[in-house]
Image (cartoon, rainbow, N blue to C red; front, side, top):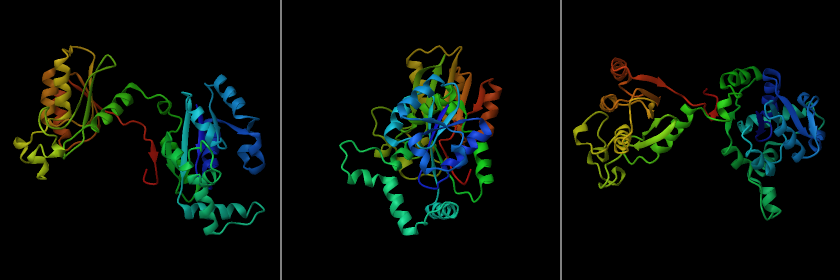
Length: 337
């Protein structure tokens, strides 16, 4: 794994790097041109490279080892992200907290601390690439703000001490290999989330994927049947009237994601005898549970809970349908971990 850490000034990039070096045996890499601006301990034993090309060649040859870098140039990040072993980790923190940290750092380093106003001006230039725009580059580099939004993992470091941050990092498990290449469960669960975005029901977004032998054979999402107006366009009176959860269900025209997927699989003549798994981002309701059992599905994987989980789980158990919850590694962690 090769972790590249980005973030605004005094957000905690090097603190997290030191955590990975000391707790997980990562080797710290750096470019020689950046050594004169850093005096952190982690740089003392860093492996140095003259160019990004040299660094990339070295890491590619030793891709099974763990490396980390904090001073990679923005224009080179996209090239590194093409590598299947690269993880872009972004760190953010409240601006007033970062300003305080920068003042504390200047008490150690011989330089004048920035006022809050000057700190904000410098921070804006760094975050939004204002200086690059002033120079009118023909191909301006992606701003730090946009890079952070597209990062593989975003950590909010609003902790007052290193011990609290390290405790969260332990729970977060940055080195989880699934962050680089998702397991089948995570892959299909994320596909069900993507399918849910096609939902047109005014009440709930649910997506479902039916898989046989690790191959998607059907997808479904909740909404009105084909030929009818979409629910979000007024197609279902019950949903558009704001009916309470669980009421007037006999008037609802929306099909559930699981129903849609089961019908689609049936149209494709899928053999449900072996190897079929149903993935849904929300625990199936009682009605869908009955249909899932009747169709012959032997395993159901869900992410979010639903109101009748306990009762429905008993029915699945009685029908010998394996039921399990899968929570993909989170892409974002903040103070409310």
